[in-house]
Structures are given as structure tokens and as C-alpha cells.
Amino acid sequence: MPTVEELYRNYGILADATETAGQHKDAYQAILDGVKGGAKEKRLAAQFIPKFFKHFPELADSAINAQLDLCEDEDVSIRRQAIKELPQFATGDNLPRVADILTQLLQSDDSAEFNLVNNALLSIFKMDAKGTLGGLFSQILQGEDIVRERAIKFLSTKLKTLPEEVLTKEVEEFILTESKKVLEDVTGEEFVLFMKILSGLKSLQTVSGRQQLVELVAEQADLEQTFNPTDPDCVDRLLQCTRQAVPLFSKNVHSTKFVTYFCEHVLPNLGSLTTPVEGVDIQLEVLKLLAEMSSFCGDMEKLESNLKKLFDKLLEYMPLPPEEAENGENASSEEPKLQFSYVECLLYSFHQLGRKLPDFLTAKLNAEKLKDFKIRLQYFARGLQVYIRQLRLALQGKTGEALKTEENKIKVVALKITNNINVLIKDLFHIPPSYKSTVTLSWKPVQKADASQKRTSEDTTSSSPPKKASAGPKRDARQIYNPPSGKYSSNLGSFSYEQRGGFRGGRGRGWGGRGNRSRGRIY
Image (cartoon, rainbow, N blue to C red; front, side, top):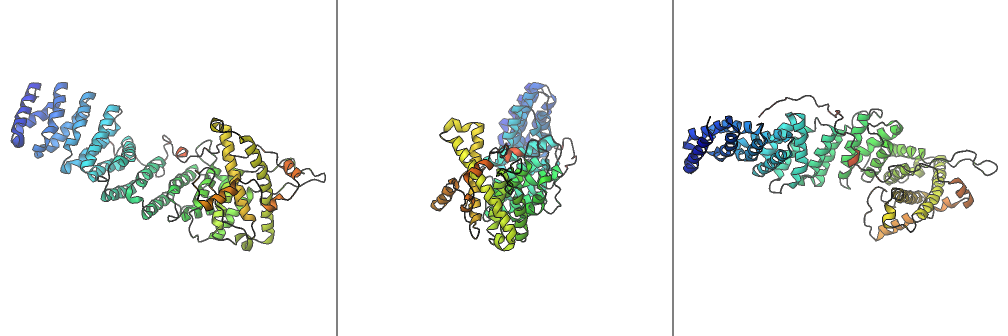
């Protein structure tokens, strides 16, 4: 084993030889043997081995293995030095191997060491992005779980920081191809991260790119399978996938396949849905997703049938007026409970799909059913006016900090909900029913309106009910519409796709049931 002095002497021989250093094989071999020495010798070897690596291609394997031994040394300072120098070995055919090694080293729990690995990976990315990705994806597909997890997180956080000249179209195509292989067997959390990676690629920002992503999500959601509402994983998988798809939909990228599946399989089983996430109103989440998707639904094969399913579900939340006793009081001791959050979603979805079949209410329903629906609409509309007035009164004069209290936040969103329902009901009371009004769903940010939309927003803030809804003495309205408790969702306005991930870490349950992979050092 060489001493410190011998290492310096051999370093001097190679440094003085400059471009002819390759002729001094014995000197370089002595430096390689330095990894078997003490802490000082190892520290020097960690710096000297990479410096002259390029001059000795015949000793490449020995040199890389020697450096790897140092990367696994017990002394953290030696490990850090060895890791810092690893990019110097990333030349030619060695680069994918170095990328593979660095990816495995992401499992380090030492923060400084972990940062060095990240920086080393980023530096070889700039040398050869495709080769580096080959090493990363190799470990994602075959590595240990901790390595796989950290490699995916590295891609999801670091890819977006790379310049365009590194992430070329060819490189992005490679990422998409390799990602598809990984997506054949992922957990829910991994799927969300890969969607974040792919949706950030420049080549997938186009209409055709977004369409590709939607198809990937649809494949993950397995929309061909039989839906089991009592299986929490089945429900969770569908919702997780749908959440990823929603931001991709547009007037050119349609949501038809998802909306069809929700209408045919999910709506009829709404009351049976189960979820592994506690404290979540799963039915409301489903209805919110359906409402958001309905705006971008294209031509649907079974439109009338699915509109009927949506209409039937809406009726469940639009009660008939309570029967009155002879003395004018309610015969029933309880008022019907008005579920405004649910009705906003269902009415909005019905309004969106109804545009595609505008004569549904007049030509597809019999006269008795249409009359029943209008009675329900009228009853609901009268209730809305009372709630809108009460909410406005409660919020009157409140600004700034006063509106930030939890109670007032709920009231602000509740006012949006009731105003939205009011506008949509007015449309349906037209003869024939109209589908022209536009509203912004209560949990979505308000878009800047142009002149034509401004008129619609004025309708939205109007407290006057549809003309037919004004029937009946005001005294009765006040009497009937004492605010029932729990009419709004308790987590109103706090709905967040990002926070609702059904596949939380540590659940140990994935979509593909990832099996055990090969273990151990494979560099």
C-alpha cells in the first residue's frame, strides 16, 4: 500500500508527463492502490484517481471500482470527496454507468452527501441527458424501493430546472418512452409524480401532447374495468387518475371518456362509494370532478341515456315542497334538507351536457315529469332567495381581515354556490329551457369577464328569483325556509386536489402491487 509521500510522488510523475501520462501505468496503479490505505491516503486517492482517469482507458473499470469503494467508505468526508469527483468518470460509454451509480447513492441520509449526489447528477445531465436518464430509469425500474422513490422525486423536481438545450425533443421523447414502461407498475403517489414530470415537458404542451397524456391517464384509470364502489382502492384509483386528467382537458382535448364513465358507472353508485381517506366527503369530490369535466365533454354516444342518469341523480337532491296541513302549517315535522354543494355540481353538469340535447326536458320527458321537475326547481329557487339574503346580510360591511375568518370564508363560498344555482335555475325556467348562461364553479378562481360575460355575472349576483318562483306569499317562504343545519359541506372551499392524494406514503398498497425487485449493489 502506498504512503502519502508515494502518492504525491506518483501524482507528480503523472502531472509532469501531461499528455503522455498514459505511459506511466505503474504510477496510476499505485494511486489506485491508495484506496486500501488509511484515511489520508484514501482522501488523496479520491482526488487523484479522477484527475488522470482519461489517460488510462484500459484501467477504467479498476478506477471506477476504486472510486466506488471510496463512495462507500465509513468516513463521511472521504465519501463526500469521492462523490464530488464522480462526474469526471462520466465519459463516453462510462456515463450511463456513472449515472446508475449516482442514482443508487441518492439513498444517502446525509444531507450534504445527498446534495453532492444531486449536483453530480445535474452536471452529467448537461454532458449527456439521454445517457443520464438511462441510468436513472434503470434504477427506477430495477432498483431498491428507496432508490426508486428518490430517483422519481429527483426527476420531478430537477427536470424543470434544466435548460432547453439539454431537454431537447429527442430527450423528451426518451423520457416519455421510459415513463410509459414505469407506469405499467406504479403506486398512486408515483403516478402523480410522473404526471407532474410529463405534463412539464415542452413537447407535451401541444394539443396532441395533452391528448397523449389524457390517454395515459385513461389507461391508468382502467375505464374498461367494472367499477366496484365498495372497494376503496378502486374508488381511490379512479379519483386519483381523474384529478390528474382534469387540468389537461380543454375545448380541443375532450373529457368524453371520463364523463361517460362517471355517468354510467359512478353516479348510479354514488351512495355506495367508500374511500380509505378519513374525513373526506367522497360523494362531493366525485360530483366536483364531474362538474369540472362536463365543460369539455365532446360528442357522446349515449348522450340521452347519460343525461337521464344525471337528471335522475339531480332529482334526488331537489326535494318536493312539504305538504301543508289544513291550518297552513307543514304537515311534516322536518323541513327537506337542501344540499346546495351537491346541487351546484349536478345542476352545472346537467346544464353543460343539456346544451348538447336542448330538447331533453321538453321532448324526452313526459309532461308529468317535467311538471314535477319545475315544482322542485321552484321550491329550491324560493329557498335560495332566503339563503342569499341571509348570507348577504351576514357579510354586509365586512372587508379585509373580517372576511378571513373560517366562518365568513364558508359564507362567501356559500354565497357563490347559491348565486350559481340561482343563475342555472333561471335558465331552466325559460320556455323552452335555455343553456346560455355561464357561471364559474364556486371552488374555481373567477376568470376576468368580457362585456358579454359581465351581463351573466350581473345575473349571478341578482337576488330576484325566476318569475315562476315568486309564486306564493312571502310569509310562507319565511316560514318554510328556516335555515336547516348542515346545508353546506363542512370543508367548503377547502377542496384541493393536491391535498387529497388517496395514496399516501406508507400505505403499502399500490395499483400494480409492485413486487420485490433485485436487491444489492449492481454497479
